[in-house]
Image (tube, rainbow, N blue to C red; front, top):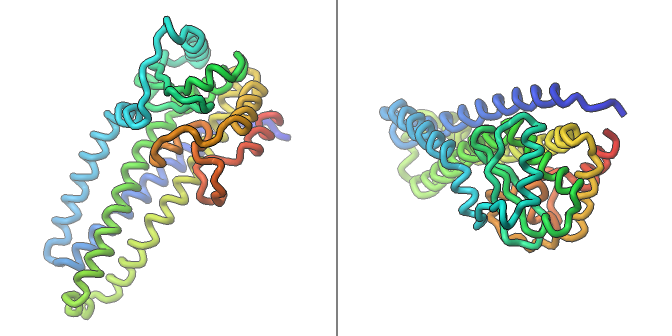
Length: 298
């Protein structure tokens, strides 16, 4: 099998990420514009202006505080050199090999095998692992997992995930508001339907389908980024078998004992809800067996 060109994949994913963010942002503006047309066309541009300001402020606030929000959500606590020397040493060694600042390290008191990375850039990176991961994985397997998460930080995956999550969330909320306004204000909309019925129909269809479409694209890119982090992690350690073996143990030992919000599930190296029968199209993670196969073919 042809060796994966990691740098090419990083470039492709960055372009796709930018494209997705543009689509999501334009979708948001269009939905707001249609809502304004439905409510009062005279204030359409005012609505759009307010939406732009709100989305920018909300995005900036989330951008600078995403790591704190995520860590609080999963009840993580800081790792210490005294209690977690083994983990700290691995993170320090791999950050040096990756050429990025040493991420802050956190742990989750769970016997499951899992980990995730967060932070807006390599200078503010965070790696969080479960206690179970440190107990069950051997040195090469632990290095494989940490290298995977280190790659997410180095490749700026977490920045993308945070921004898109915010924008997708706003589209879902606004589309829901629009749907409710149509439901409860149907009797008042007849005059407006005569003026712009086609626009309202198109807007309604878009408002319903846009959140679904954007979410599916987001999930697809999330899966691609997991493959990329697997490849980058294998390149970093020069030993892809370590991560492949770790994924095998994750599949064997995890039983959905890690209780976290579904909103943060895409951040983890393995889906905390993976035992549920979910369609591949709706899964935030690629199939573990497929990931193992790709790693062993590197």
